[in-house]
Image 1 (cartoon, rainbow, N blue to C red):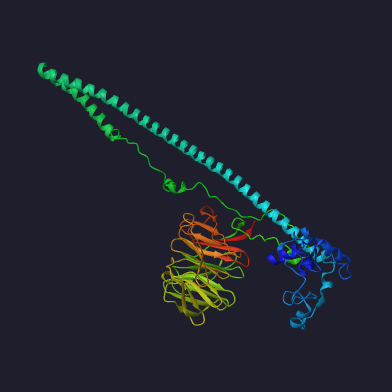
Image 2 (tube, one colour; image 1 turned 135 degrees about the vertical axis):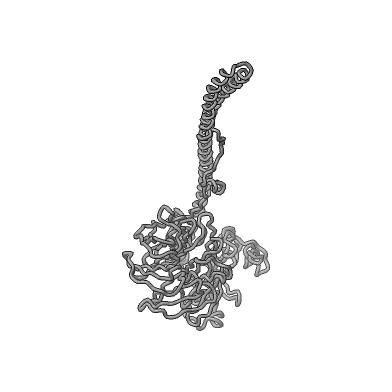
Length: 566
Protein backbone atom coordinates (compact mmCIF):
# COMPACT_ATOMS: atom_id res chain seq x y z
CA UNK A 1 0.00 0.00 0.00
CA UNK A 2 1.42 3.40 -0.99
CA UNK A 3 1.84 6.38 1.35
CA UNK A 4 -1.20 8.35 0.13
CA UNK A 5 -3.48 5.34 0.60
CA UNK A 6 -2.15 4.77 4.11
CA UNK A 7 -2.75 8.44 4.98
CA UNK A 8 -6.23 8.30 3.45
CA UNK A 9 -7.15 5.34 5.69
CA UNK A 10 -5.85 6.95 8.90
CA UNK A 11 -7.24 10.49 8.57
CA UNK A 12 -10.97 11.30 8.43
CA UNK A 13 -11.66 12.46 4.89
CA UNK A 14 -14.39 14.92 5.81
CA UNK A 15 -12.30 16.53 8.56
CA UNK A 16 -9.25 16.65 6.33
CA UNK A 17 -11.30 18.60 3.77
CA UNK A 18 -11.98 21.16 6.54
CA UNK A 19 -8.29 21.16 7.48
CA UNK A 20 -9.00 19.23 10.67
CA UNK A 21 -6.81 16.27 11.47
CA UNK A 22 -8.90 13.52 13.08
CA UNK A 23 -8.31 9.79 12.97
CA UNK A 24 -10.88 7.72 11.06
CA UNK A 25 -12.64 4.88 12.83
CA UNK A 26 -14.69 3.47 9.93
CA UNK A 27 -14.33 3.24 6.18
CA UNK A 28 -17.11 3.90 3.69
CA UNK A 29 -16.48 2.13 0.42
CA UNK A 30 -19.23 4.13 -1.26
CA UNK A 31 -17.62 7.43 -0.36
CA UNK A 32 -14.15 5.94 -0.69
CA UNK A 33 -12.86 7.63 2.47
CA UNK A 34 -12.43 7.14 6.19
CA UNK A 35 -14.67 8.80 8.79
CA UNK A 36 -14.12 9.84 12.37
CA UNK A 37 -16.71 9.03 15.02
CA UNK A 38 -18.56 12.39 14.69
CA UNK A 39 -18.57 12.29 10.90
CA UNK A 40 -19.79 8.69 11.02
CA UNK A 41 -22.87 9.82 12.94
CA UNK A 42 -23.65 12.54 10.37
CA UNK A 43 -22.91 10.07 7.57
CA UNK A 44 -25.37 7.55 9.01
CA UNK A 45 -28.08 10.22 9.45
CA UNK A 46 -27.72 11.89 6.04
CA UNK A 47 -30.33 10.89 3.46
CA UNK A 48 -27.64 10.58 0.77
CA UNK A 49 -25.35 8.25 2.72
CA UNK A 50 -27.51 6.54 5.32
CA UNK A 51 -27.66 3.35 3.19
CA UNK A 52 -23.90 3.21 2.75
CA UNK A 53 -22.13 0.24 4.28
CA UNK A 54 -19.23 1.05 6.61
CA UNK A 55 -16.62 -1.19 8.13
CA UNK A 56 -14.25 -0.67 11.05
CA UNK A 57 -11.02 0.87 9.83
CA UNK A 58 -8.95 -1.75 11.67
CA UNK A 59 -10.76 -4.53 9.81
CA UNK A 60 -10.62 -2.73 6.47
CA UNK A 61 -6.85 -2.31 6.79
CA UNK A 62 -6.51 -6.09 6.90
CA UNK A 63 -7.39 -6.29 3.20
CA UNK A 64 -4.48 -6.98 0.82
CA UNK A 65 -2.64 -3.93 -0.45
CA UNK A 66 -3.69 -4.52 -4.06
CA UNK A 67 -7.36 -4.59 -2.97
CA UNK A 68 -7.00 -1.39 -0.96
CA UNK A 69 -5.59 0.33 -4.02
CA UNK A 70 -8.81 -0.33 -5.96
CA UNK A 71 -10.88 2.89 -5.73
CA UNK A 72 -14.42 3.77 -6.74
CA UNK A 73 -13.24 6.71 -8.81
CA UNK A 74 -11.62 6.75 -12.21
CA UNK A 75 -7.92 7.67 -11.74
CA UNK A 76 -7.88 9.44 -15.11
CA UNK A 77 -10.91 11.69 -14.70
CA UNK A 78 -11.43 11.51 -10.91
CA UNK A 79 -15.08 10.69 -11.44
CA UNK A 80 -17.04 7.85 -9.91
CA UNK A 81 -17.31 4.63 -11.87
CA UNK A 82 -20.81 4.31 -13.30
CA UNK A 83 -20.57 1.88 -16.20
CA UNK A 84 -18.95 -1.55 -16.72
CA UNK A 85 -17.69 -2.43 -20.24
CA UNK A 86 -17.89 -6.17 -20.88
CA UNK A 87 -15.83 -5.86 -24.07
CA UNK A 88 -12.84 -4.41 -22.22
CA UNK A 89 -13.71 -6.03 -18.87
CA UNK A 90 -13.20 -2.73 -17.03
CA UNK A 91 -15.22 -0.18 -15.02
CA UNK A 92 -15.71 3.24 -16.64
CA UNK A 93 -16.71 6.68 -15.54
CA UNK A 94 -19.06 8.86 -17.58
CA UNK A 95 -16.20 10.55 -19.42
CA UNK A 96 -14.45 7.23 -20.12
CA UNK A 97 -17.60 6.04 -21.90
CA UNK A 98 -17.70 9.16 -24.07
CA UNK A 99 -13.97 9.09 -24.88
CA UNK A 100 -13.21 5.39 -25.32
CA UNK A 101 -16.28 3.16 -25.06
CA UNK A 102 -19.06 4.82 -27.02
CA UNK A 103 -18.78 2.12 -29.74
CA UNK A 104 -18.60 -0.79 -27.31
CA UNK A 105 -21.53 -3.13 -26.93
CA UNK A 106 -22.45 -4.63 -23.58
CA UNK A 107 -22.27 -1.48 -21.41
CA UNK A 108 -24.05 -2.01 -18.10
CA UNK A 109 -24.62 0.08 -15.03
CA UNK A 110 -21.90 -0.85 -12.60
CA UNK A 111 -24.38 -0.99 -9.71
CA UNK A 112 -26.26 -3.73 -11.54
CA UNK A 113 -23.06 -5.61 -12.25
CA UNK A 114 -21.75 -5.59 -8.68
CA UNK A 115 -25.12 -6.13 -7.00
CA UNK A 116 -24.94 -9.16 -4.68
CA UNK A 117 -21.47 -9.98 -6.05
CA UNK A 118 -20.35 -11.62 -2.79
CA UNK A 119 -23.22 -14.11 -2.94
CA UNK A 120 -22.99 -14.65 -6.69
CA UNK A 121 -22.17 -18.01 -8.26
CA UNK A 122 -19.04 -16.50 -9.83
CA UNK A 123 -17.69 -15.41 -6.41
CA UNK A 124 -18.51 -18.79 -4.88
CA UNK A 125 -16.96 -20.53 -7.90
CA UNK A 126 -13.67 -18.64 -7.50
CA UNK A 127 -13.66 -19.36 -3.78
CA UNK A 128 -14.19 -23.06 -4.48
CA UNK A 129 -11.43 -22.98 -7.10
CA UNK A 130 -9.01 -21.52 -4.56
CA UNK A 131 -9.95 -24.18 -2.02
CA UNK A 132 -9.51 -26.96 -4.58
CA UNK A 133 -6.17 -25.62 -5.85
CA UNK A 134 -4.95 -25.34 -2.25
CA UNK A 135 -6.02 -28.92 -1.50
CA UNK A 136 -4.44 -30.21 -4.74
CA UNK A 137 -1.16 -28.45 -3.93
CA UNK A 138 -1.22 -30.01 -0.45
CA UNK A 139 -1.87 -33.44 -1.97
CA UNK A 140 0.94 -33.02 -4.49
CA UNK A 141 3.34 -31.77 -1.79
CA UNK A 142 2.37 -34.72 0.41
CA UNK A 143 2.92 -37.07 -2.55
CA UNK A 144 6.39 -35.59 -3.23
CA UNK A 145 7.30 -35.85 0.48
CA UNK A 146 6.16 -39.48 0.46
CA UNK A 147 8.26 -39.99 -2.69
CA UNK A 148 11.35 -38.67 -0.87
CA UNK A 149 10.69 -41.11 1.95
CA UNK A 150 10.14 -44.00 -0.49
CA UNK A 151 13.39 -43.10 -2.31
CA UNK A 152 15.20 -43.26 1.03
CA UNK A 153 13.63 -46.66 1.75
CA UNK A 154 14.49 -47.86 -1.80
CA UNK A 155 18.09 -46.72 -1.30
CA UNK A 156 18.37 -48.59 2.00
CA UNK A 157 16.87 -51.73 0.48
CA UNK A 158 19.08 -51.62 -2.63
CA UNK A 159 22.15 -50.92 -0.49
CA UNK A 160 21.38 -54.09 1.45
CA UNK A 161 20.82 -56.03 -1.80
CA UNK A 162 24.18 -54.79 -3.16
CA UNK A 163 25.94 -55.94 0.02
CA UNK A 164 24.14 -59.29 -0.13
CA UNK A 165 25.14 -59.65 -3.78
CA UNK A 166 28.75 -58.95 -2.82
CA UNK A 167 28.53 -61.64 -0.13
CA UNK A 168 27.07 -64.12 -2.64
CA UNK A 169 29.86 -63.33 -5.10
CA UNK A 170 32.47 -63.74 -2.36
CA UNK A 171 30.89 -67.04 -1.27
CA UNK A 172 30.80 -68.25 -4.86
CA UNK A 173 34.43 -67.28 -5.44
CA UNK A 174 35.43 -68.92 -2.15
CA UNK A 175 33.74 -72.14 -3.25
CA UNK A 176 35.44 -72.00 -6.63
CA UNK A 177 38.78 -71.42 -4.92
CA UNK A 178 38.20 -74.27 -2.46
CA UNK A 179 37.23 -76.65 -5.27
CA UNK A 180 40.26 -75.70 -7.37
CA UNK A 181 42.61 -76.08 -4.40
CA UNK A 182 41.19 -79.52 -3.61
CA UNK A 183 41.71 -80.52 -7.21
CA UNK A 184 45.25 -79.11 -7.08
CA UNK A 185 46.15 -80.98 -3.87
CA UNK A 186 44.63 -84.22 -5.17
CA UNK A 187 46.54 -83.97 -8.45
CA UNK A 188 49.81 -83.32 -6.63
CA UNK A 189 49.24 -86.20 -4.18
CA UNK A 190 48.38 -88.63 -6.98
CA UNK A 191 51.49 -87.80 -8.99
CA UNK A 192 53.66 -87.86 -5.87
CA UNK A 193 52.51 -91.42 -5.10
CA UNK A 194 53.20 -92.56 -8.66
CA UNK A 195 56.66 -90.97 -8.69
CA UNK A 196 57.49 -92.23 -5.17
CA UNK A 197 56.51 -95.77 -6.14
CA UNK A 198 58.72 -95.56 -9.23
CA UNK A 199 61.60 -94.20 -7.13
CA UNK A 200 61.32 -97.20 -4.78
CA UNK A 201 61.55 -99.59 -7.73
CA UNK A 202 64.55 -97.71 -9.11
CA UNK A 203 66.29 -97.80 -5.74
CA UNK A 204 65.87 -101.56 -5.59
CA UNK A 205 67.42 -101.87 -9.04
CA UNK A 206 70.23 -99.52 -8.02
CA UNK A 207 71.04 -101.73 -5.04
CA UNK A 208 71.14 -104.79 -7.27
CA UNK A 209 73.50 -103.09 -9.75
CA UNK A 210 75.70 -101.79 -6.92
CA UNK A 211 75.96 -105.32 -5.53
CA UNK A 212 76.86 -106.66 -8.99
CA UNK A 213 79.59 -104.02 -9.33
CA UNK A 214 81.07 -104.98 -5.96
CA UNK A 215 81.00 -108.66 -6.80
CA UNK A 216 82.41 -107.98 -10.23
CA UNK A 217 85.59 -106.44 -8.70
CA UNK A 218 85.98 -109.44 -6.40
CA UNK A 219 85.48 -111.85 -9.29
CA UNK A 220 88.03 -110.00 -11.34
CA UNK A 221 90.62 -110.35 -8.55
CA UNK A 222 90.01 -113.76 -7.06
CA UNK A 223 87.76 -116.04 -9.16
CA UNK A 224 89.05 -118.63 -11.61
CA UNK A 225 88.41 -118.27 -15.32
CA UNK A 226 85.69 -120.90 -15.24
CA UNK A 227 83.99 -119.25 -12.32
CA UNK A 228 84.26 -115.90 -14.04
CA UNK A 229 82.80 -117.24 -17.28
CA UNK A 230 79.78 -118.84 -15.59
CA UNK A 231 79.19 -115.81 -13.31
CA UNK A 232 79.28 -113.52 -16.36
CA UNK A 233 76.34 -115.41 -17.85
CA UNK A 234 74.21 -114.91 -14.71
CA UNK A 235 75.21 -111.27 -14.32
CA UNK A 236 74.50 -110.58 -18.00
CA UNK A 237 70.95 -111.94 -17.66
CA UNK A 238 70.28 -109.76 -14.59
CA UNK A 239 71.77 -106.71 -16.31
CA UNK A 240 69.51 -107.33 -19.32
CA UNK A 241 66.49 -107.42 -17.03
CA UNK A 242 67.50 -104.03 -15.58
CA UNK A 243 68.00 -102.61 -19.07
CA UNK A 244 64.51 -103.83 -19.98
CA UNK A 245 63.21 -102.18 -16.83
CA UNK A 246 64.78 -98.88 -17.94
CA UNK A 247 63.42 -99.26 -21.50
CA UNK A 248 59.93 -99.94 -20.16
CA UNK A 249 60.09 -96.76 -18.07
CA UNK A 250 61.11 -94.78 -21.12
CA UNK A 251 58.49 -96.44 -23.30
CA UNK A 252 55.72 -95.81 -20.78
CA UNK A 253 56.83 -92.16 -20.31
CA UNK A 254 57.47 -92.84 -16.64
CA UNK A 255 60.56 -90.65 -16.76
CA UNK A 256 58.66 -87.62 -18.09
CA UNK A 257 58.53 -84.63 -15.81
CA UNK A 258 55.05 -83.86 -14.46
CA UNK A 259 54.20 -80.20 -13.92
CA UNK A 260 51.21 -78.43 -12.44
CA UNK A 261 49.83 -75.33 -14.11
CA UNK A 262 46.62 -73.30 -14.11
CA UNK A 263 44.68 -72.41 -17.22
CA UNK A 264 41.85 -69.89 -16.86
CA UNK A 265 38.52 -70.58 -18.50
CA UNK A 266 37.78 -68.48 -21.58
CA UNK A 267 34.84 -66.93 -19.75
CA UNK A 268 37.27 -65.40 -17.27
CA UNK A 269 38.81 -63.21 -19.94
CA UNK A 270 35.88 -60.86 -19.52
CA UNK A 271 35.80 -61.24 -15.77
CA UNK A 272 37.30 -57.79 -15.02
CA UNK A 273 34.61 -56.20 -17.17
CA UNK A 274 31.89 -58.32 -15.64
CA UNK A 275 32.99 -57.46 -12.11
CA UNK A 276 32.98 -53.73 -12.88
CA UNK A 277 29.24 -53.76 -12.27
CA UNK A 278 27.09 -55.98 -10.06
CA UNK A 279 23.93 -54.48 -11.48
CA UNK A 280 22.25 -51.31 -12.64
CA UNK A 281 20.37 -48.77 -10.56
CA UNK A 282 17.13 -48.11 -12.45
CA UNK A 283 15.11 -44.92 -12.07
CA UNK A 284 11.57 -45.86 -13.09
CA UNK A 285 9.19 -42.93 -13.45
CA UNK A 286 5.56 -43.90 -13.12
CA UNK A 287 2.24 -42.11 -12.68
CA UNK A 288 1.67 -40.72 -9.19
CA UNK A 289 -1.03 -42.26 -6.99
CA UNK A 290 -2.01 -38.80 -5.74
CA UNK A 291 -5.75 -38.25 -6.34
CA UNK A 292 -6.61 -34.67 -7.26
CA UNK A 293 -9.98 -32.90 -7.12
CA UNK A 294 -11.51 -32.64 -10.58
CA UNK A 295 -14.07 -29.87 -11.01
CA UNK A 296 -17.10 -30.94 -13.01
CA UNK A 297 -18.42 -28.97 -15.96
CA UNK A 298 -15.32 -26.76 -16.02
CA UNK A 299 -13.26 -27.86 -19.00
CA UNK A 300 -10.45 -25.42 -18.27
CA UNK A 301 -10.09 -26.78 -14.74
CA UNK A 302 -10.13 -30.53 -15.50
CA UNK A 303 -6.81 -32.30 -14.87
CA UNK A 304 -6.60 -34.88 -17.65
CA UNK A 305 -4.90 -38.16 -16.65
CA UNK A 306 -1.65 -38.77 -18.54
CA UNK A 307 -1.96 -41.47 -21.19
CA UNK A 308 0.52 -44.28 -20.54
CA UNK A 309 3.20 -44.39 -23.23
CA UNK A 310 4.53 -47.95 -23.67
CA UNK A 311 8.16 -48.33 -22.56
CA UNK A 312 10.86 -50.87 -23.43
CA UNK A 313 9.80 -52.84 -20.33
CA UNK A 314 6.22 -53.14 -21.61
CA UNK A 315 7.30 -54.71 -24.90
CA UNK A 316 6.43 -58.35 -25.57
CA UNK A 317 7.58 -60.49 -28.54
CA UNK A 318 5.72 -63.56 -29.79
CA UNK A 319 7.42 -65.70 -32.44
CA UNK A 320 5.01 -66.03 -35.38
CA UNK A 321 7.19 -67.69 -38.04
CA UNK A 322 10.71 -68.95 -38.77
CA UNK A 323 11.75 -68.49 -42.42
CA UNK A 324 14.48 -70.35 -44.27
CA UNK A 325 16.29 -67.71 -46.31
CA UNK A 326 18.06 -68.20 -49.65
CA UNK A 327 21.67 -67.20 -50.29
CA UNK A 328 24.55 -65.83 -48.23
CA UNK A 329 24.97 -62.48 -46.48
CA UNK A 330 21.38 -61.21 -46.12
CA UNK A 331 21.87 -57.45 -45.59
CA UNK A 332 18.34 -56.10 -46.04
CA UNK A 333 14.76 -57.19 -45.36
CA UNK A 334 11.26 -55.76 -45.59
CA UNK A 335 7.58 -56.69 -45.40
CA UNK A 336 5.09 -55.90 -48.16
CA UNK A 337 1.53 -54.77 -47.22
CA UNK A 338 0.13 -58.20 -48.21
CA UNK A 339 2.52 -59.98 -45.79
CA UNK A 340 5.13 -61.15 -48.31
CA UNK A 341 8.76 -60.85 -47.22
CA UNK A 342 11.72 -59.40 -49.15
CA UNK A 343 15.37 -60.30 -48.54
CA UNK A 344 18.40 -58.80 -50.32
CA UNK A 345 21.48 -61.03 -50.78
CA UNK A 346 24.73 -59.09 -51.03
CA UNK A 347 27.02 -61.64 -52.70
CA UNK A 348 24.59 -63.01 -55.29
CA UNK A 349 23.10 -59.59 -56.11
CA UNK A 350 19.61 -61.10 -55.84
CA UNK A 351 16.44 -59.94 -54.13
CA UNK A 352 14.16 -62.80 -53.09
CA UNK A 353 10.45 -62.17 -52.51
CA UNK A 354 8.97 -64.87 -50.26
CA UNK A 355 5.32 -65.79 -49.84
CA UNK A 356 3.66 -65.64 -46.43
CA UNK A 357 4.25 -69.40 -46.00
CA UNK A 358 8.01 -68.92 -46.50
CA UNK A 359 8.22 -70.32 -50.04
CA UNK A 360 9.88 -68.39 -52.86
CA UNK A 361 7.55 -66.19 -54.92
CA UNK A 362 10.03 -64.63 -57.36
CA UNK A 363 13.59 -63.26 -57.61
CA UNK A 364 14.80 -59.87 -58.83
CA UNK A 365 18.26 -59.23 -60.33
CA UNK A 366 18.89 -55.47 -59.97
CA UNK A 367 22.68 -55.75 -60.23
CA UNK A 368 25.75 -56.89 -58.33
CA UNK A 369 26.26 -56.54 -54.58
CA UNK A 370 22.79 -55.44 -53.52
CA UNK A 371 23.11 -53.92 -50.06
CA UNK A 372 19.84 -52.65 -48.59
CA UNK A 373 16.21 -52.26 -49.65
CA UNK A 374 13.27 -49.99 -48.85
CA UNK A 375 9.69 -50.35 -50.14
CA UNK A 376 7.77 -47.12 -50.89
CA UNK A 377 4.14 -48.13 -50.45
CA UNK A 378 2.56 -45.03 -52.07
CA UNK A 379 4.34 -45.54 -55.41
CA UNK A 380 4.77 -49.32 -55.14
CA UNK A 381 8.50 -48.93 -55.80
CA UNK A 382 11.37 -50.88 -54.28
CA UNK A 383 14.56 -48.87 -53.65
CA UNK A 384 17.77 -50.93 -53.80
CA UNK A 385 21.27 -49.75 -52.83
CA UNK A 386 24.65 -51.07 -53.94
CA UNK A 387 27.61 -50.25 -51.71
CA UNK A 388 30.26 -51.11 -54.31
CA UNK A 389 28.37 -49.75 -57.33
CA UNK A 390 27.74 -46.51 -55.39
CA UNK A 391 24.22 -46.37 -56.77
CA UNK A 392 20.51 -46.49 -55.93
CA UNK A 393 18.13 -48.45 -58.17
CA UNK A 394 14.33 -48.06 -58.19
CA UNK A 395 12.18 -51.03 -59.26
CA UNK A 396 8.46 -50.87 -60.05
CA UNK A 397 7.04 -53.83 -58.10
CA UNK A 398 3.91 -53.93 -60.27
CA UNK A 399 5.76 -55.00 -63.42
CA UNK A 400 9.09 -55.85 -61.70
CA UNK A 401 11.01 -53.59 -64.05
CA UNK A 402 13.90 -51.30 -63.23
CA UNK A 403 12.91 -47.65 -63.65
CA UNK A 404 16.13 -45.74 -63.04
CA UNK A 405 19.55 -45.79 -61.39
CA UNK A 406 20.90 -42.87 -59.37
CA UNK A 407 24.69 -42.48 -59.09
CA UNK A 408 25.56 -41.06 -55.65
CA UNK A 409 29.34 -40.67 -55.89
CA UNK A 410 29.88 -42.65 -52.68
CA UNK A 411 29.10 -46.07 -51.25
CA UNK A 412 25.41 -46.51 -50.42
CA UNK A 413 24.05 -48.89 -47.77
CA UNK A 414 21.02 -48.41 -45.47
CA UNK A 415 18.23 -46.31 -47.02
CA UNK A 416 14.77 -44.85 -46.12
CA UNK A 417 12.25 -42.60 -47.91
CA UNK A 418 10.28 -39.51 -46.85
CA UNK A 419 8.50 -36.83 -48.90
CA UNK A 420 10.26 -37.53 -52.19
CA UNK A 421 13.72 -37.77 -50.63
CA UNK A 422 15.94 -40.78 -50.00
CA UNK A 423 18.07 -40.67 -46.83
CA UNK A 424 20.99 -43.11 -46.92
CA UNK A 425 24.18 -44.32 -45.21
CA UNK A 426 26.93 -42.95 -47.46
CA UNK A 427 29.78 -44.70 -45.61
CA UNK A 428 32.78 -42.29 -45.78
CA UNK A 429 30.43 -39.52 -46.98
CA UNK A 430 28.35 -39.84 -43.80
CA UNK A 431 24.58 -39.52 -43.61
CA UNK A 432 23.22 -38.16 -46.91
CA UNK A 433 19.94 -37.33 -48.66
CA UNK A 434 19.19 -37.44 -52.40
CA UNK A 435 16.15 -35.88 -54.09
CA UNK A 436 14.16 -38.17 -56.39
CA UNK A 437 13.26 -35.15 -58.54
CA UNK A 438 16.66 -33.75 -59.56
CA UNK A 439 18.94 -36.41 -57.95
CA UNK A 440 20.85 -33.73 -56.02
CA UNK A 441 22.79 -35.01 -52.98
CA UNK A 442 23.06 -33.23 -49.62
CA UNK A 443 25.34 -34.27 -46.74
CA UNK A 444 23.58 -34.15 -43.37
CA UNK A 445 26.22 -35.73 -41.09
CA UNK A 446 29.85 -35.77 -42.23
CA UNK A 447 31.13 -38.49 -39.89
CA UNK A 448 32.22 -41.78 -41.47
CA UNK A 449 29.52 -44.40 -40.89
CA UNK A 450 30.16 -48.16 -40.82
CA UNK A 451 29.42 -50.09 -44.02
CA UNK A 452 26.53 -52.59 -44.30
CA UNK A 453 24.55 -50.69 -41.64
CA UNK A 454 20.89 -49.75 -41.94
CA UNK A 455 19.29 -46.42 -41.08
CA UNK A 456 15.71 -45.77 -39.92
CA UNK A 457 13.20 -42.93 -39.89
CA UNK A 458 10.23 -42.14 -37.64
CA UNK A 459 8.22 -38.93 -37.69
CA UNK A 460 10.81 -36.17 -38.19
CA UNK A 461 13.76 -38.13 -36.76
CA UNK A 462 16.54 -40.17 -38.35
CA UNK A 463 18.35 -43.04 -36.63
CA UNK A 464 21.74 -44.44 -37.62
CA UNK A 465 24.67 -46.44 -36.23
CA UNK A 466 28.02 -44.77 -35.59
CA UNK A 467 31.42 -46.37 -36.16
CA UNK A 468 31.78 -46.93 -32.37
CA UNK A 469 28.54 -49.00 -32.29
CA UNK A 470 26.63 -46.15 -30.66
CA UNK A 471 23.08 -45.46 -31.83
CA UNK A 472 22.42 -41.85 -32.86
CA UNK A 473 19.15 -39.94 -33.28
CA UNK A 474 19.05 -36.67 -35.24
CA UNK A 475 16.46 -34.50 -36.95
CA UNK A 476 15.97 -34.40 -40.73
CA UNK A 477 18.63 -31.68 -40.99
CA UNK A 478 21.23 -33.82 -39.20
CA UNK A 479 21.11 -32.00 -35.84
CA UNK A 480 21.95 -34.38 -32.96
CA UNK A 481 19.08 -35.17 -30.56
CA UNK A 482 20.59 -38.03 -28.53
CA UNK A 483 23.30 -40.67 -28.63
CA UNK A 484 23.15 -44.05 -26.86
CA UNK A 485 26.34 -45.99 -26.01
CA UNK A 486 25.54 -49.67 -25.49
CA UNK A 487 28.91 -51.42 -25.20
CA UNK A 488 29.39 -54.21 -24.19
CA UNK A 489 25.69 -55.17 -24.69
CA UNK A 490 25.77 -54.43 -28.43
CA UNK A 491 28.74 -55.37 -30.63
CA UNK A 492 29.02 -54.60 -34.36
CA UNK A 493 25.52 -53.14 -34.67
CA UNK A 494 24.03 -53.62 -38.18
CA UNK A 495 20.23 -53.44 -38.50
CA UNK A 496 18.03 -50.70 -37.07
CA UNK A 497 14.24 -50.08 -37.05
CA UNK A 498 11.70 -47.96 -35.11
CA UNK A 499 8.16 -48.82 -33.99
CA UNK A 500 5.05 -46.66 -33.58
CA UNK A 501 6.10 -45.51 -30.10
CA UNK A 502 9.61 -44.40 -31.08
CA UNK A 503 11.32 -47.44 -29.57
CA UNK A 504 14.48 -48.30 -31.51
CA UNK A 505 15.41 -51.92 -32.37
CA UNK A 506 19.08 -52.68 -33.13
CA UNK A 507 20.74 -55.99 -34.09
CA UNK A 508 24.24 -56.89 -32.84
CA UNK A 509 26.19 -58.92 -35.41
CA UNK A 510 28.97 -60.09 -33.07
CA UNK A 511 26.93 -60.01 -29.85
CA UNK A 512 24.26 -62.24 -31.52
CA UNK A 513 21.35 -60.29 -30.07
CA UNK A 514 18.62 -57.72 -30.63
CA UNK A 515 18.37 -54.71 -28.31
CA UNK A 516 15.52 -52.19 -27.95
CA UNK A 517 16.20 -48.57 -26.89
CA UNK A 518 13.74 -46.12 -25.33
CA UNK A 519 12.55 -43.13 -27.44
CA UNK A 520 14.81 -40.75 -25.50
CA UNK A 521 17.86 -43.05 -25.79
CA UNK A 522 18.30 -43.29 -21.99
CA UNK A 523 17.21 -46.87 -21.43
CA UNK A 524 17.66 -50.20 -23.23
CA UNK A 525 16.64 -53.82 -22.95
CA UNK A 526 18.07 -56.97 -24.54
CA UNK A 527 15.15 -58.65 -26.36
CA UNK A 528 16.65 -61.68 -28.10
CA UNK A 529 19.85 -63.72 -27.69
CA UNK A 530 21.72 -66.49 -29.50
CA UNK A 531 19.64 -69.09 -27.66
CA UNK A 532 16.59 -67.65 -29.48
CA UNK A 533 18.21 -68.46 -32.83
CA UNK A 534 19.79 -65.02 -33.34
CA UNK A 535 23.15 -65.73 -35.03
CA UNK A 536 24.98 -62.84 -36.76
CA UNK A 537 21.79 -60.81 -37.31
CA UNK A 538 22.21 -58.16 -40.02
CA UNK A 539 18.78 -56.93 -41.13
CA UNK A 540 15.76 -55.60 -39.22
CA UNK A 541 12.38 -54.29 -40.36
CA UNK A 542 9.39 -53.10 -38.31
CA UNK A 543 5.93 -53.21 -39.88
CA UNK A 544 4.12 -50.31 -38.13
CA UNK A 545 0.77 -51.17 -39.68
CA UNK A 546 0.63 -54.70 -38.26
CA UNK A 547 3.16 -54.36 -35.38
CA UNK A 548 5.49 -57.07 -36.67
CA UNK A 549 9.27 -57.29 -36.36
CA UNK A 550 11.27 -59.12 -39.06
CA UNK A 551 14.84 -60.17 -38.17
CA UNK A 552 17.24 -61.79 -40.66
CA UNK A 553 20.47 -63.58 -39.75
CA UNK A 554 23.41 -63.32 -42.13
CA UNK A 555 22.52 -66.74 -43.50
CA UNK A 556 19.98 -69.55 -43.25
CA UNK A 557 17.22 -68.10 -41.05
CA UNK A 558 14.90 -65.14 -40.48
CA UNK A 559 12.28 -64.67 -37.75
CA UNK A 560 8.91 -62.89 -37.78
CA UNK A 561 7.62 -61.67 -34.40
CA UNK A 562 4.32 -60.18 -33.29
CA UNK A 563 5.03 -57.13 -31.09
CA UNK A 564 2.62 -56.18 -28.31
CA UNK A 565 2.66 -54.29 -25.01
CA UNK A 566 2.12 -55.91 -21.63
